[in-house]
Length: 255
Image 1 (cartoon, rainbow, N blue to C red):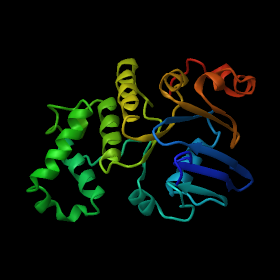
Image 2 (cartoon, rainbow, N blue to C red):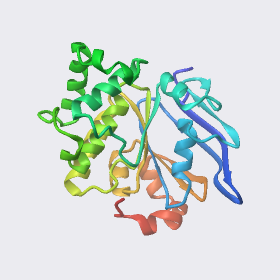
Image 3 (tube, helix red, strand yellow):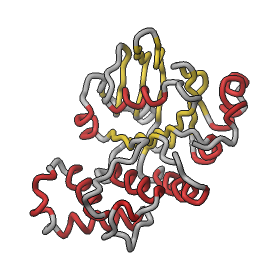
Image 4 (tube, rainbow, N blue to C red):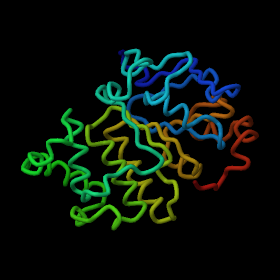
């Protein structure tokens, strides 16, 4: 892959559900080291597109290229091994395990090992040291032994994002990480996401357009399954088509 080539390149991606085109010829490029935000109204096709990129949903046509290779037909786990992972809109954590154990499972999985080796896992100091370091970075120092339900909603979301990062992926897909948060938790999550660009590439789906325009290096707008604008945040915000189709009713909106 040349230095100028996108890390993720989507071309003419389609997905229909009956008579509805959820994605309708989507073209999208995400460059290494950037936070690229995908915004649009409810029902625009954002979650469908992210599922197609992650491999959870097969596309009807079109292609997905990642790090120079065609991954259109690869299953989710093979995409993850190549360094493309997804953090879900709804938090998915192991509630029977502690905060530290959740992170340790994620680190273990990133090494291609399974949860079945848990007894041996508990004895692996290096693995738990790595899990503790990740938790501290997430602002969860001092909460390693807490149960999941003891964490606030924002802390649970931060843990889930951290678990996606455990394998040090090249690209992480974040699906509405600020959803359901108050102002303080939203700011903490925004700070966490902003810090990711130093080490990761991020494709961010988010309804909070104010946060998007503060965080993103690039923004793409999806409306009715099609990208209607893509570029720098200031360019997209000033685009009359974007204003008419989305921003006019979404400015200041939070998820």
